[in-house]
Image (cartoon, rainbow, N blue to C red):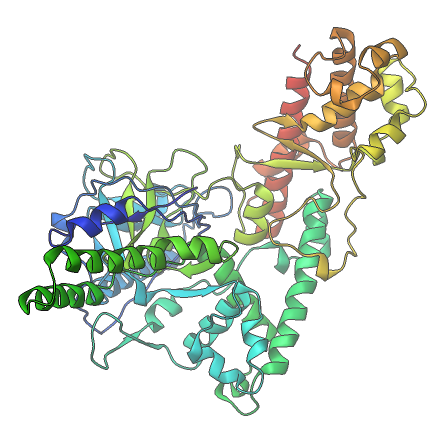
Length: 588
């Protein structure tokens, strides 16, 4: 989803405000769960009092991730756990006030009021207007990195003095993992960019509140991964594991001997913890513009006044010079980053905002970068009653990504997908029996030349160099989506396969003439859909358990491990998607 930069109007700069309002930065966010903290350093706020703020501009939605939504979190009835959560919440809210995080009509809550029973954000009053600001977080409290080798956290890079590339060339999540470990284990103090003195922000209370363990499948055994009954994800998890180990080994080779990072023994478990934190808490975006800096404009106004006052030129000439400054700022902050850094992505972990849980559609809140405030804000998307949880949406995230990166499954996920084996691996003879037709010679070769038979199925032994984040269909399998059903290209291929000689000749013996529904005739369409149904039924029959058996298992899951529970929940959703598609194919 898109997110815009939110601009507050400055009465002293109407021209600048008008120009900036015409430029928007698109930021696609993927965000996640839990955050709690406290701090003893009081801060001067970067923002005006929230009681005076109600957003009048439209702010686009962050794509985010959740700690409490979906299946991935269960509530605890243990009294000690409840007490610990209350202390965590109190610490977080105290720390938020002390470090300049502003809140209005919203609080951190846990338990039954939060979907999933975890931690989340709850309204404390009625929110009467959409786009009402609820949270603002100064930028200096965030952790950030990017996909560029040119950008690095200098405080972390110093531990790689003789091999900076080992840090700079690492994936974004690995750089954030290092940054988090250094802040947690070496020094939790960070500069306070909101003032010009030497005051530091102690991040330790926030760091102490981060999860100590995760339920993502990279922590599962091979036996537990097989319980997913879904080879594409099992393969991606195995490849992810190999990629992580390779990255970790490269990092360890670059650490300066006898440095604090070397002496602290940065273990693979530490690295994996940091990667989990980064993947589950960071949001990302292509925008790289800077926050508003008033100094160039103040200097420009002074120069204009001096230029005109000293009689060196006319007001019109001075205004032309000032306009160049304004245009240059717009180019620097908005235009050039989009042109020169179009493949550049920024990743940010923003404390407190990551408390917001996920909902796949119809989110109650969204996040924006505050251009004039140099921070991030959470605003409502609609009117909200008191006691309503404020959730934010990731955008289109399948359960494959949600489970692999965030450790939970979303029930009836509108963005879920199922990747079947490529068409070349389907049981063609079974399809011929099902439709009552022998597929004519040469059709498969024709489809192969058209690239419709796909590649080869994913192997559990694929190389880690093949790992690409978020991509689970490297084998070019048949993709089924909840929103669109079976891939239309595959339906075209099936129309070709089941077509009689007469139907094939009527189509000009061209695959491209059979891409639309009923393009081969009603009987051809019926048989193509029936072939697709049969293929999906065979896929379901190949599972070790049925949907009904899995649903019965869920009723008995009282003492099961997180891995066991998540595996069953995941495969239930995949089987539901297949059954829904089979039903839709039966409708003519």
